[in-house]
Image (cartoon, rainbow, N blue to C red; front, side):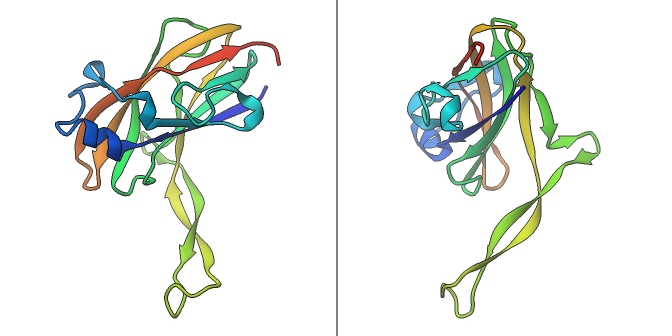
Length: 179
């Protein structure tokens, strides 16, 4: 069994420019985000096609765990994104994905995240780094059977004040075969 990590970088700023009135008001009314605004990345050996695009097709085997992590291109500075719903028409992967970390009841998972340290005088190399405690999460599904799976992620965009800007969606896929 392998873990297949998929980073989903979402260009929330451009999506908001294209949809100035926001997205859908609920996950069920999500607006299509546009493939040009989604960038999905895996390790090169795991991609069949579509690396760094919205239609990433990954290779997986039965028993593998697929792990998705969502982030805006500004790394949640101007706009933040959070997955809100997942659908598929097949049972080739566990549905819905499990939330690992995040805020689960009273438990918040944390990791140490490297952060740059300002030098004195400012912006003078060499720079240094330290680690800060940060909340952490990902979404995980287990591969159950072979075949091709088209699925839909719905995500919610938030502005830098935490206000919801609506729900959006797109539809990548996975090919499940013996590696």
